[in-house]
Image (cartoon, rainbow, N blue to C red):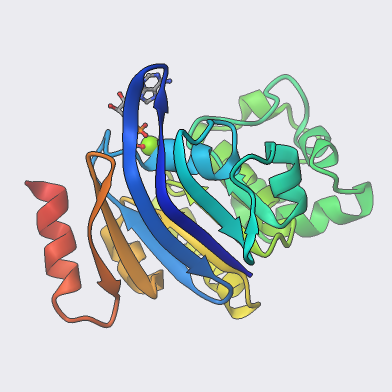
Length: 228
Ligand SMILES: Nc1ncnc2c1ncn2[C@@H]1O[C@H](COP(=O)(O)OP(=O)(O)O)[C@@H](O)[C@H]1O
Ligand SMILES: [Mg+2]
C-alpha cells in the first residue's frame, strides 16, 4: 500500500498551516516526520485522516483519490492513526476501549500482554486511572493490533519512560517487518534514527529537508533543524 500526499494544504478557519506538503509512505517502510513544535505535524496527521479538510492538493491511497473521503472510509481503506491528544474513553475500562475499537474479548489479553507491564492485566481498570504514558501505550497498542496496512503515529512515545519507548519501538519495527508502512512523528531523534528508513523535515507547514536515513549527513541536518 502506498500513501501519497501531493501539494497538500490545510489549516484552521482562514489560517493556513500546511502550505503544500508532498510525501509518500509505502508498505514496509518507516518514514520519520520531524519538526519543531508548531511546524504542522499534527495538522498533517489530521488532514491525512480526514478529520481536518484539505483546502488544496491531494491524497491518494494506492492511486485512489481519498482527498474528499470521510475518515471512516479512509480507515476502511487501510489507514489508521494514533493521535497526539488522548483519544480514549477515560470513564470506560481498558477492555471497553478495546471493544470499541473492534476487538473481541478473546483478543484482549493478547493485545495487552504484548505491551508488558504497562498494560498487561489491566483490562478491567478504568482507562482514566492509567498514567498518561500508559494511555499513550494503549492507543499505540490498539492501532498496532488493528493490522491496518498504513499507520500514522503522532508522537506515540511522548512522555513515555525509556523502557516503554524501547518496547514501543520494537513493536513499530515489527509492524514494518510484517510489511506495514508507518509515518512516524517522533521527537526522540535517537529512536527515529534507529527505526526510520527515511526522514522528512517539516518547518512552518513546508517540507524543508529529507532523505534516506542511511545518508550520513541527514542526522546532523535534522538535529540542526530541530535545535535552531
Ligand atoms: N485547533 C487549532 N486551531 C487553530 N490553530 C491551530 C489549531 N491547532 C494547531 N493550530 C496551529 O497550527 C500550527 C501547527 O500546529 P500543529 O500542527 O499542532 O504543530 P505540531 O504538531 O508540529 O507541533 C500552530 O501554529 C498551531 O498554533
Ligand atoms: Mg503535534
